[in-house]
Length: 133
Image 1: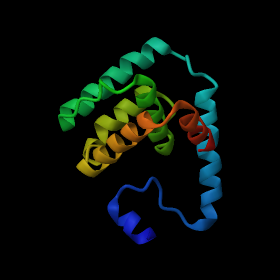
Image 2 (image 1 turned 180 degrees about the vertical axis):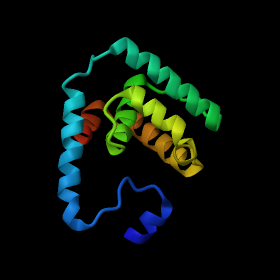
Image 3 (image 1 turned 90 degrees about the vertical axis):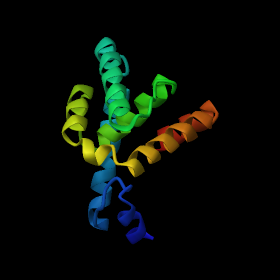
């Protein structure tokens, strides 16, 4: 199973078992730090979200604007955290530099499935799932 997951290119990180606790703790810290400041730079965040969505549309011809912005933000924040990036402006630059890797059809399809699945869940279930991460 791990080999097939790695071969799919859709895993977030490939780590030896010894390094997994450290990576999970770092991920949880970044997630909590972001949640502690949800309204930080709200105007800038909204503008950069629009730029990210435009970049996705330009690269993939997929328009994500019909999805709820809170859902998009949660998914983007998770991707930022996995990339060890704290600010959306840095993430936008990262996406532009690494566009081939981020806009691979499998990666975009996986992102869409996560969006659709999270929008189908009732809010309490989504909250429990989100806080469990």
